[in-house]
Image (cartoon, rainbow, N blue to C red; front, side):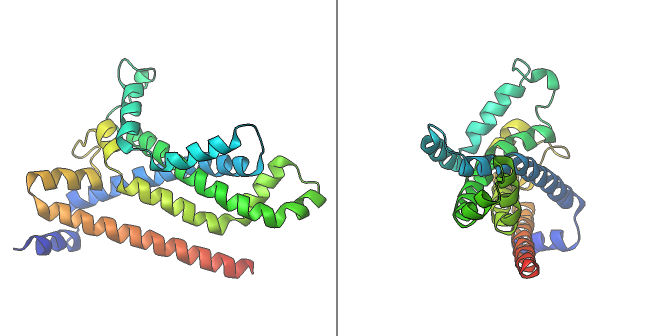
Amino acid sequence: MPENVSALHLVLTGDPALFAIVWLSLIVSLSATLFAALVGLPLGAVIALTRFAGREPVIVVLNALMGLPPVVVGLLVFVALSRSGPLGSWGLLFTPQAMVIAQTLLVIPIIAALTRQTIEDLWIEYRDELAAMNIGPLGRVRTLLWDARFSLVTALLAGFGRAAAEVGAILIVGGNIEGFTRTMTTAIALETSKGELSLAIGLGIVLIFIVILISALAWGVRRAGERFAG
């Protein structure tokens, strides 16, 4: 049986091993995106609305961190969570929680940088109105984040895409343990190295489908929200 036919058979028949890997990948990537959003959205808004010494270098570094090498993040998290590391007592190394931490660190700069640019553009439009209403810094952050919520869906989607496609960092801190920390990307890498292409291609099909589905949902939410908000 050709490899692509075998892979499609695994997907269509709901192969338990394949979908267990898919489920773990979704949990880890969505959790990392959520935690990164909790940090990245307000961080980006504060940088956009605040003027302080060294702001420009901070923006340059933040933009540069969007391309942060995953293996470097994986190494740093590994050192922190290892038995002799400062967080070694937590016992998180080679667990899904460690993978969430690594992916969160990778996604935060993406969401923060895109949020900073979006809020800065919106601030030009809202500046006089918010100043006339005497709204303080915290109120400005809340107002602009809320009014930019549909545009910020793109930032969240970019963050999820980075998390879902990442392999280097989670391989280092997760260990690719079957039935425990094996995700779509690490499984694809493993099966390809073994020459077992059926499962690798099947997981690749599912990964592409998920990315397209989430992109379509985000687009639909944005369009519906913009239409509802007028």
